Image 1 (tube, one colour):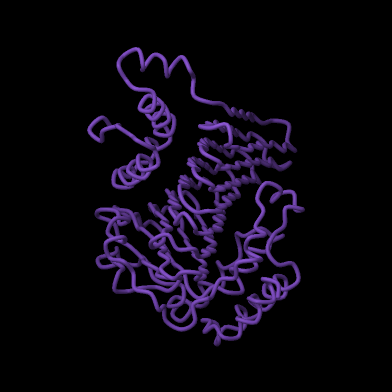
Image 2: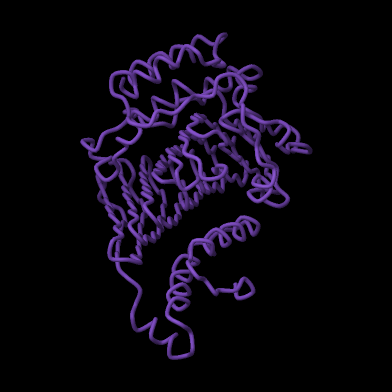
Length: 437
């Protein structure tokens, strides 16, 4: 039995929140039909040539039926929580009210589970759902549309600004479990928010997380969006972040990938007139990890500005992938776009594939991109050794410095501390002290 057949068979057993919504049932049925025919993406598809998900055909994961059977590790959740933040917590893909913190949200702000929102705000959801994902949706997007049971719904009314971050935690507890979620984030005009998505799991279990986040940033609104992917060493992860920006909107996204045996995140943005987009990212792959980041920015209107800065580190026998594409459409005159990707190899067996792309269909634009893949500078290592630092510590210090330039761009101090702790845990025999930072 193929993976597609297996999941189609399980489809009927799921309690899905769409019985009273014909439009959602129709979307699910169309998605399930596409997935049953095409299955998960193949390396034969150009955008998946570096990432083979054939392992998902061999290892079949069990969807959550009914309430989650696993209990969230409160200590693990405490480690993931950001100090002073509101939170929506999902355990094995299902909202956990007991672990969430939503008291004292500003009046009019909605932060709840998508399943609840489909009951309370179905018309609002219909206007947002499936609006930002690519028209030619691949197998994973079809999969999430067909199988999601829950996710986060965040709505910011016009003029509202959050004075502290909102964290959305997705935590997996079940070995061989499947957690599928869809998240919707919408800011009306002149609104502002900082939202952090965090993905992690318990122990060293193997599981599959598939999550799609759709974002709508209204006119003259600003969203700082962070994603921390810290799945277990045996976890599988697919994440998609798809944003639409209205006139003069500002979208800043920071992607941090440290976990998972096989993990891929897509980040797409569509810019309106005068919109600004900043994409920053860092991945650190060790062991046998395979970490893939794909970005796509569509400049669809004049006077848009975009900046991309990504760094990757790969050691042992790990593999990293970065593919960044900027498309400037004919009507997008006065576009200003830059992309930079720098990568560091820590061993001879590690590999990083980088593919920057500019596709320009307008003549009055300013666009540039650059990419490097290299190793630690031997002279820099020698310089530290000559001052009494042993070689492993010297290499760790230089690696940390390379990565920390991206970590320093995080504007939330509590998240920056959490990420630095994650980064230090990956450096073997590290003698770097926290009080140096």
